[in-house]
Length: 367
Image (cartoon, rainbow, N blue to C red; front, side, top):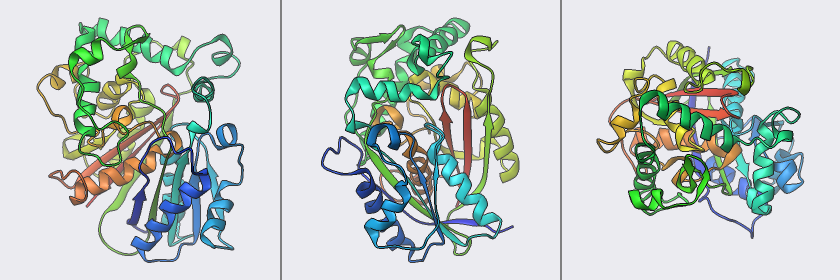
């Protein structure tokens, strides 16, 4: 089985890019990633969770290649909700491991700001069951609020404790040049922000942003590499679940990913986790085995914690289907000491989740 090395990558500064088309944004980062890798690719994998709904565009990969004057390459589109980026990385990884391809590129891109805010939320809710959840008005936010209530009740926390998550994310986002929010937040900022779904407030919600990221993966070369990838689904409907303070898809994927990589959670130096809502970040850490169940908010009171140095969804922004590609590069660069943060250690983890604990992908990176 071949190794899978991270040969090059590039990120687009997130924001509201009204002046750019979705394929143009993707082409910019792909061009930069290819230049850094200095190789020709055998295929292109594209992750986008909303291109049909937000941008009225299919065959996105073809138009990205057209922008760069590339021809004859196979291109594949991957959609898995917020998990799309990590799912595309997984597909590319398996193609290289099998020997079918030697070098491939993965591009993640979404542009929700081609829509109005109310339309964005309607699109975002399509990760729920269209007939039995979305139709009756449920949203990912409402489910997150119920999970936050259950967590705080079980472990005897107050909302002030949960507020430490967005405060930490804003602290981390200050040093990330690609982040949407690069300013610190105080407890009173979080507490005084608008109540959006009790107990969650505006500061608990990662803003939807336009963004694009690209990575080139190769079977040859040196440097950082993907040690393992595992994906697990959870097909139990939300209303039939017996425990609302665990992310089962995350736990199952993490167990397999650690085993395949030959490491334990104690070996992880940095992690980028899915925190579209504050409670999801808390549950992700515990699902990954990086923190004992119920202990995350107590640990956050003690100050810095090696998670989401990018600022996570809250400060970097929620780039939806592109998130997994952002996370892969953010963790890799932290391990290498490139860019805005250096960590001590050889292993990093990314956690990407689609829907409300419907599917999770865990990727282990080593240097």
